[in-house]
Image (cartoon, rainbow, N blue to C red; front, side, top):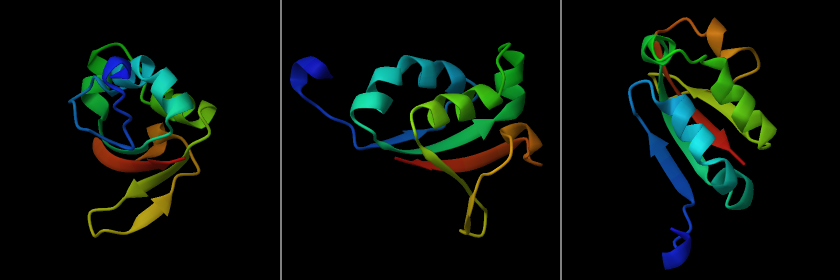
Length: 97
């Protein structure tokens, strides 16, 4: 992306368990470009890859993002506790810089 000068301002992820790997790979983009992120989290898939769901939250908080859970009815609630405490196997969140 750098060679074409494309700067992401919004990233949507629904990658069936590879979310932790994706966030590790985009650390520099999170720090420099600060895109808005919309992400579906698949807990069972993440755990089956030997990763922890909480790693996503830690990476985003380290990059100074605010996290919000997007409810199925469209409501948006600030995430204040651990992702591990989310009651669904799959949930969606929004990360705002």
